[in-house]
Structures are given as C-alpha cells and as structure tokens.
Image (cartoon, rainbow, N blue to C red; front, side, top):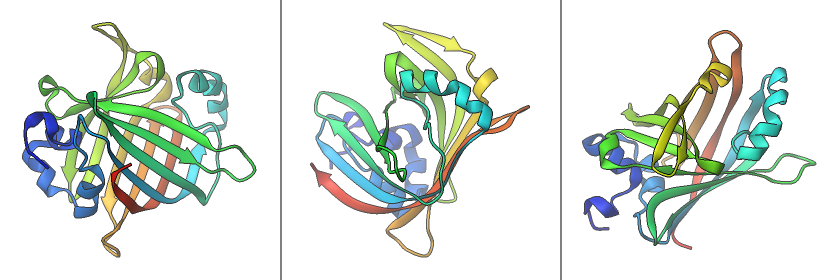
Amino acid sequence: MTTNANTRPVFQLALGPAWDQLGDVIRRHYTMAPFSDDYVCVRGTMSEVHHAPWAELLMPLGRLFGALVPHTGTDVPIEVHYRCRPDNPHLYWDRVFHFKGRPDFHFRSHMEHTPAQGSEVIEYVRFGIGMRLAVSAEQGALVFRDLGYIWRIGRLRIPLPLGLLLGTAHVEERPDPSDPDHFTMKMLLRHRWFGDVFRYSGRFRLARLGPQ
C-alpha cells in the first residue's frame, strides 16, 4: 500500500504516528486504502447487548436515523463489514446483529476524516446526523471519545444537543492477548443522571482481508 495522505487508512490519518502504537490485529482490520474497493470482515459474539427500559421511547427515532440497536440479548452473533469505495475516502461499516427469533439487524454508518480535524473523525448515519469522535491509541487499543453531535446540511455543521438525552459515548477495540487474530470491543453510552443508556461488548476474530 502506498503512503500518500489520500491513500492512508482513515484511522492512520487521524492518529498520525500513534497508529504504530495500536495492536497488530487492530491495525490489520483497519488497513484499508481510501479510494479503493478494500474490504474486511470480522465475526464474533456480543456477550451483551443492552439498553435501559426507558430507551424504548427512543427506538422510533433510532430506526428513522438507523442509529440505535433496538433489541437486547446475550451471546448475540455478529459480523461487521468494513468497506472503502473507489469514489471517496470514507470508511463504511455494516454491523449485522443476529438476534434469535428476529430478522437480522443492520447498523450502518460511515466514518469521515479531514486534515483540519486532526485526531477527530465523524461517524455519520442517515440524513446527515453525525457524532464527532476523538480517536486515540491507548495500550494497543483504539479508543473513541464522544465530542458531541452534529447535523450536516450542505456545508453547514449544526451542533445538536443530543447528549443531553443520550449521554456520552465511549468505544474501544482492544487486542486479545490470548490470540493474535482476536480483539474485544465495548461501547457504552452513559448519561450523567440516568446511567447506562446503551451498551454492548463482545469478542471478534479477523475473518477476511482484501478486495471483495
């Protein structure tokens, strides 16, 4: 892979030299070149997928924007498909949750980074709703910290006070020291007054790397 700025992986651009501090399995499943048809799939099991009972009230809005996992469960099989596209530099995600007795649930989004953002990326779902995320490498793990929500309309980036309702997100992907091809991940959306609004965690294996 070339190392020109426009062909380096999204998170390598965001992290700069700290990219080399990530665990090998983390780097491998994000080593996809922008403006390409690179594709990676990881498969695993979510030991827990949880949301607070009152969060059911948010599900209609979540379904509209494609941003919230509407079901709960334990030992939920999941696969995550990561793709680049030849026509843009973004990283596309499709998380497929296999809840028992329910249709597969797809949580789709994409990540964008621009040089002016430094170590920040924005994860977008439908209709231009995005979450700003600070990216860091910590003890081999890739860590995302919530910087707030925006609504993109054309060239405008309008701040949205969704954190007042949803709380603050923290996500990390960490190498599993017991196996070089496995990593663990966890996502927590916690409100300062209401506690955990959403959370899920699991263990994954890097399954396939290369063009689709």
